[in-house]
Image (cartoon, rainbow, N blue to C red):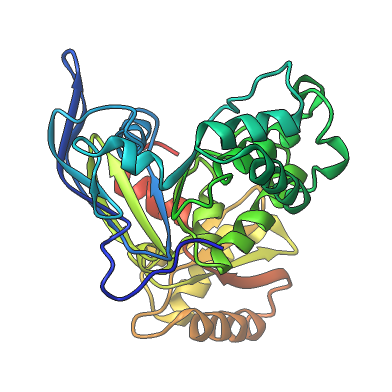
Length: 326
């Protein structure tokens, strides 16, 4: 189990005015970030936004040029050794010794962290079972698949039961099955109360698992909130439909807008695919719009192949916030 958290404990991460430049390139230009104990916070941003730089500062691998970062109440500049002793870090690439077995990799990490040989071997066996690596634990790491390497790397970051786990794009390059296995383990750790900071290129991971989402762009946090709150910025849910006769899509769209009493732009037509997209009615939610659209189409005798609610996505919110082209 992870260290217990009480009401009087400090924030897991508290960053204020953090700046970092590499030559003339400003990676971070004044980041303020707070991560509460026991939560999973996702840090999203386009390539070059400064995510990895911020993660490296939090993990004491890079010194900030200005500002202050505290991890579990410890200053990352003044107390780096104490910070490292209480966190686990999994980077974008597995940091393993290819010649050593999975067990020896884990035991080595444990020994370097101060564990005695016996407890280190016991902990390695425990983690191998947790990550589904028991049968492979005695094999050289070079024989592991990509998914197995990632799981072994994550196991290494947990050898000392860290109070904070920093995950820098842990599922990059993994196939869907390996990603699912990894998230099953992370979900179990989260249920036990492990605090996590996650960067990811897969926005559905943040949407599904994160308690709070922070969007980093051009070196600053530009938005924070739950995934639902960020998606709500895109407006109410709308309706998507697919007509049985695609050739009539434009005509049906005009007639539907008139029946619903909305501007023509509120009903978008995609002729070739026979698709309609209806913006939520003023003062009504997605369900009301769906029922009204279904009734209007039925009244006009329009054959519909499919009609469903369309929820705003985190991808859409991310693209709108960052200005990145889709």
